Length: 246
Image (cartoon, rainbow, N blue to C red; front, top):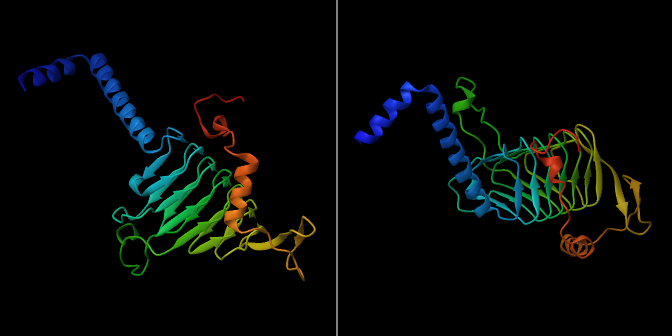
């Protein structure tokens, strides 16, 4: 104890040495945190400034990249079940926001652009005479996103929503209700503008008199795995540490 106190006293007399020790300590904490992330998610690239809250309720598949500035927030940290599940071969763009109510699930091969949001939980506002930061959050919504969905810039999914596999969500779309598989969705509020017709093999305006539905989600995932295997992730786009010119 005396040695420790003497060391602290000496550091107080030397600002440069104190700053050096602080930097080394912060570096050691960073290494420890990165090692913990690597051990939990060994096949995932997570940018250094991604915030993970409730990490032990987050499950991420293999060959996944999560972009800089993203925030993955599991609001209920006590449940033993997985709260946020991201499948294999997904790319989460920069500054994405996940707020988990009961659960958020993204299946394999999903792709999100910048500033996308998946909001399954919000602060309660039952009593406006209380500060909303003290009222707690809702924990009853489930968001399910099928395999190989693409979310354009700034798109949002809010509340209890199920999005079928193979969907394309346009930039700025706001989704608050279920979307069938192989749909092209635009607008605020979002609407299905087109669906993919598997008889003509093209996108057709919706509603239409008749379309041929595509494969089941599990058959679709098997097809994607046979066709693409493990995709090469554009990690340089997800990070901030590889320079400004690609």
